Amino acid sequence: METLADFLTNYIVKKRAISKEDYEIYHYGLQTGLEMLICMAVCFFMAVQMGMMVQCMIFFLVFFSLRSFLGGLHMNSFMACFFLSCTVLYLTLLLVKYCPLSSRMAVLVLACETVTVCFSKPVENSNRPVNEREKKEFLDKIYKILILLWVLIVFCCALGWSRCLTTVGYTLGVIIISMYIEKVKTRLKRGKAESV
Image (cartoon, rainbow, N blue to C red; front, side, top):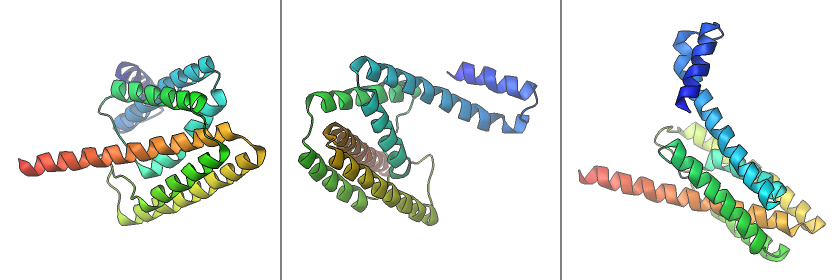
């Protein structure tokens, strides 16, 4: 992936579309974008094979909108992230397909998850620390997304779309689990650093 990003970045520098000083920024953006594109393409392919494209899109919509501000588990390499992401999506879709929740149960689960999210602090990433102003902005955005999510939940309840509710519930659960795994991982790293 890095080789392709190198090639593309060098190409746009040669064409003078960007300056050499901006090389690293564009290289990182291209590499990250290509990695995400490949991961999403594989995930969509799996969803099509399972006949669950709508649920996959709901998963990505909920996951990306909230996880951007809540934080969560970060892997150290593209391959680890790729395999974990594909596995998590696949397992979530299997749960939706074979362990569906009734509308009432899904709403109950979603209410508990919403409370959990509201009382959990977003997970900071050591690669991108956030200041107090950004934390406040993130919380505002999280609350707005949760309000929109509840509009979707009410809409799905009104139409009897329990599979949609199940997908949202399991996806929010994945986000919460990811947050707590990253918090534990961070505490363990700090503990090791302090003991040295």
